[in-house]
Length: 156
Ligand SMILES: Cc1nc2c(=O)[nH]c(=O)nc-2n(C[C@H](O)[C@H](O)[C@H](O)CO)c1C
Image 1 (cartoon, rainbow, N blue to C red):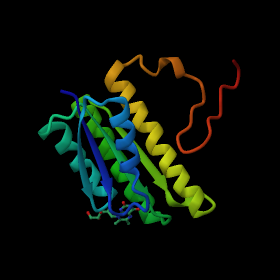
Image 2: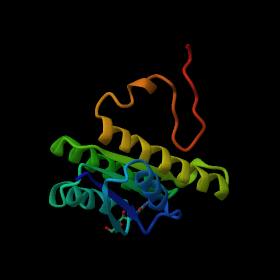
Image 3: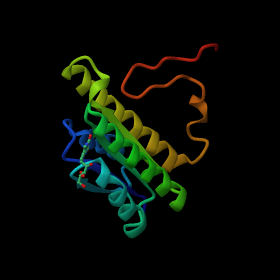
């Protein structure tokens, strides 16, 4: 049985996990999905650890939201280091989907970034879990973007 962990926060202003779960259910219907919601990004690493180690998840996708202030950005950095350490320790993927509140011009744009990023990274996770390390090789160097339209390769 494949198990996928989904971690999200109440700090986030978009329910990104809902969109990620839709993609996982559609593309990996045999998987059990375990969702874990925490207050904020600094609480994400321990939730991801519990899902990977205690619950035996094969991979985790995290959906975080970073406020516009410097202290928010430091919080993100702390979380990011925690998630990277967790991946190294467990040898399992944690796909870190993060929206930074100051990366868009208006709230509609921000919403669309959040939904697109959650969906595309959920599909990346499914590919890695389902087909392994060469699953994304066909897209290598293609300038793919999550949250924005793809940039494309510089040269074909
Ligand atoms: C400053 C700050 N910024 C954010 C943020 O940008 N995004 C977020 O999800 N959470 C933030 N938090 C809350 C912490 O991540 C955490 O939830 C609390 O410190 C409780 O452990 C804090 C404290």
